[in-house]
Image 1: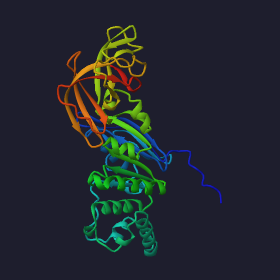
Image 2: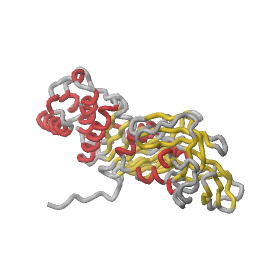
Image 3: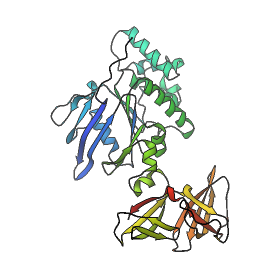
Length: 363
């Protein structure tokens, strides 16, 4: 048996999509490609254009310009348009939208055509994949939210869509269920070799599910890549801040160096006098418990120590969050410390920075 011939084209390709509502440019030149069996996440704050992009791909909204291709074939531009029901694109939303008067079997089979026996076999196959074979003759109201979500997935997959569009599909589930349901959903989608475009505003969800993240802001994709690269090589301060709390240390570049209370930082390419922001996540600040702040000699990794006074300490479960007011300029910095560490307000402590974990941007 020979392996199937792989298409030279991506499963989904969108080129320079634009959409304006009134005087607001909601989507501004978005381009993406997704391969079969891969999950790409459109990640960004509410109102950045994620859902509008999804609606244009689905065919329920029309772009002002740009093209959409499936397996190399044009399905929509500003002149030619294949209707939504013929695009072989599945949809999943936060609202599972199961028909309450239909059984699970009839819900899953709703979009299927062909002989009754074939439809029943496909329904049984998909319910087995989502571990809900026992629900086949039940009605949606007797199922939990997580079970209804998996039935909605089975229904969306029943017609064998080439692409699955998912708009915040797990936000209606409680945290206890969410991780397990997400993992099960991802496994089924990959097994079906479906290209997935997932919209979310939750960085944790994107990191957990996506092969690639496209970070959106103000209608544009500002950065795109594997989750590891997006997290560890952010394009700007806002990209860092979208994934975690941040600390910002400000300075001025002089001779390609910026002087700070934590030592000098390299700032090549910036003119003398240019304002600089050094961004670091709370987990990459370290406490120097030598009360005089002298301890080991400064290193290329940790730089020098700067003193601050504890403003507040809170226990967060598996770590503690300690907030400091820094002596040198009264700015506030946050530090996370593993386990329980609850110093009293007013306690002076010295901090050092993981210099290899800093991001330096022009202000």
